[in-house]
Every structure is written in C-alpha cells, then in structure tokens.
Length: 325
Ligand SMILES: [Zn+2]
Image 1 (tube, protein in one colour):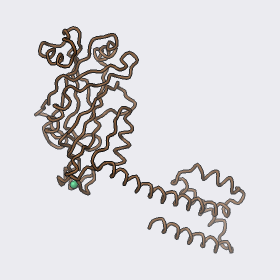
Image 2 (cartoon, helix red, strand yellow; image 1 turned 90 degrees about the vertical axis):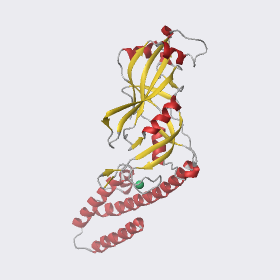
Image 3 (cartoon, helix red, strand yellow; image 1 turned 120 degrees about the horizontal axis):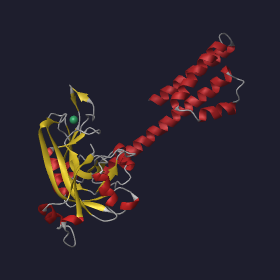
Image 4 (cartoon, protein in one colour; image 1 turned 90 degrees about the horizontal axis):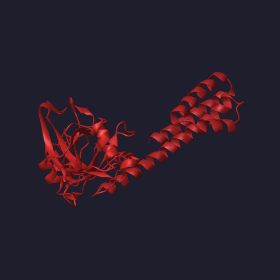
C-alpha cells in the first residue's frame, strides 16, 4: 500500500491559499507556491495483511493535517519539505476492497514554495515521473478479522474457513512526518505502522519481524510504546535460544561428516574437510552427510568397519533426538 502523488494541481486557488497561509510566516501569493495531491493510504489490505478501517482513515485525515514531508534526497532539494494543508477521505462506492468493503482513500493536498531548491522536485511531478510517499502512523488497536480479538492464535495471511486472516488497524493516535520516494525505489515504499500505548488494552505486541521491517526503512524512527519493548526482548531471547539449538545441530552434522569422510574418502585430509564444511549451509551439510553415508555404506559392505558404521548411525540418531526434544 503505497501513497502516490497522483496529479499536480499547480497553482493554488483562493481557498487553498488561505489554508496554506495558516502555516507560513508571511502570506504567500498563489504564484509563490506549488500544490499537489498525494494519496497517503487507503483501506485496502496491504502486503502485510493489514488494513485500516474507514474510521481510521478519518482520524488519520485529522492527524496528517499540517504534517511535513521531506522531498527526495536529491542534491537540489536537500532539507526541503512539503507541507500538507488539507486532507480528506475520498470514497469510491463502486469499488470494493478485497474484504468486500467500500474502497476509500486518504488524500492530502500539499504545497512547496517555488524556489530554486524545489524546482527539480516540482519538475519531476510536472513531467509525470511517478513518486510515492512513505508515511508513518501509530495505531492503538489492531484486531483479528476472524475472531475480532486483539490477541489471538490466528495467523495473519492464513485462510480460515475460506476467509483470509488480516489485522484490522483502528484508533490511530499519531501521524509522523512522511517522505517522498522516487520510483523505482530500491526499497518498497509503504505505510509504516506503529502501535501506541494503550497499556490498559493489554494487547500491544511488538515483534522482531516488525522491527526488522522498520530497520529496512532508512528514514524510520523506531518508537517502542507500552509493552512493545518487553515483547521484542522476549522474542529475541527466544530466538537466541533457538539459534543455539541450530548451532548445536550444525556442529552435530559437521562431526558426522568428519567421521564419515574419514571412512568414505580417506584421501581427503581432515583439515580440507574442515575447510569445506565451514562454508556450507545447513541444507548443504545435510546433503553432504547423506552422500557420504551412501559412499561409506558402499565402501564397507561386510567388514568390521560396518559395526563402526552402525555405531555411527546410532550415535547420530541419539544426537538428532537430543536436538528435536
Ligand atoms: Zn483471531
């Protein structure tokens, strides 16, 4: 769900100018400002399987009024920003969202002063180069579309009885600055969502996955609210534990490869084997262990080594069991 600059109105009308001048230190004339429209967000389900309610869009409309947005990180427009001077929720009754609700967009009118610094930005809009906006907001309520609870076992994106589980975002509490992203962007622009306070609701949950996504956004400000920090810390600790199990499994595989290699391909030195396994992924190590096992089985059909081979298998089975406990 990307905000998009959809058209350029250019010269501000009298009404728009009056609104703009509420934000300026001195009254600007129509020819001194450039105005344009931006679709900030809508109520369609986004790629994170989240969507705003129409009520949330109404609230965001109020919160985004007066907010500023940084222009592209272009040399000519460094430090320049556009300001939203008017917002509205636009309804498209004939169009439905994937959840079967009437489609609606939050549209903002923004302006930049016409200066040498903003000329390139204005030119890019005028010439039709599509730009997107990345907006950020905080919401207090996020409910499951399947059961209506804020905290439940349903997984976002999964289908339950033919219905896809999405998180419905409501009760926005804050809107942050936004930024313009030239298209094609190296990263996907989109709406950056945050949870906000409301500890009494007891359902604010931050996650490492959300955190990682925020870190992908170069201009994101990460704010932990309410119980989020605790939730993220707990998840990181759990992940650390699981990573230790993963390390242990890898070490078990490497040990097995070392022993099998000594049987199946004794001409390859231990140090060379060591060097090979070092660079392999767990999947590759598993494949290598299987191949070596086959080679070892073929090489030693009926010899005292077979007993050793069996002992090998038993030992590994025990190792594997230990890992899966
Ligand atoms: Zn649920």
